Image 1: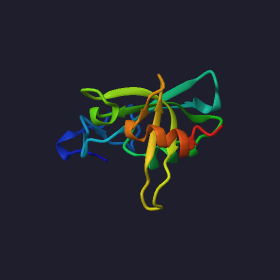
Image 2 (image 1 turned 45 degrees about the vertical axis):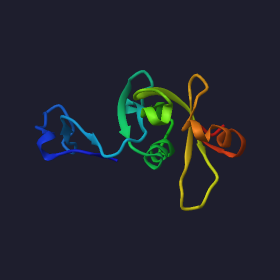
Image 3 (image 1 turned 180 degrees about the horizontal axis):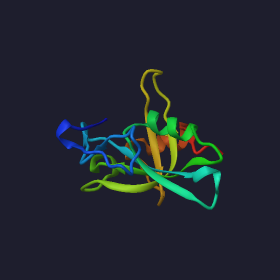
Image 4 (image 1 turned 30 degrees about the vertical axis):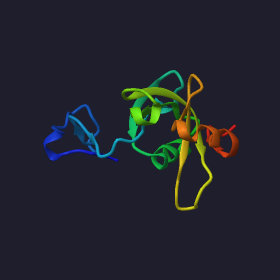
Length: 142
């Protein structure tokens, strides 16, 4: 989950929408994965006038909510998975294109997921074999 502090609030700019709040920084309360999502939309429905916006999404529920809101004129065009070292098997954080989101079998109340990234990796690495043999790919739906 992301959080911020009142001291990080930036003054509004006339060129930005009035119903938004700008922040100098956000913080992450846990050492967990999150998603860097690029969302595009056609300004005034014109496919030649493409606008992009990036979202920092802390969980699968938020990601899937945005993905499910896709329309022909506004859609998620890329998702990057940002993982800590304990999850990706490296010394630090990595940001990689997300190719697939896999729901893992388990108790109904435990939402466990595996993430397939470009290059063939599946995170968390300890769930790779379960994801390949028993997982249900919930995104992208093909």
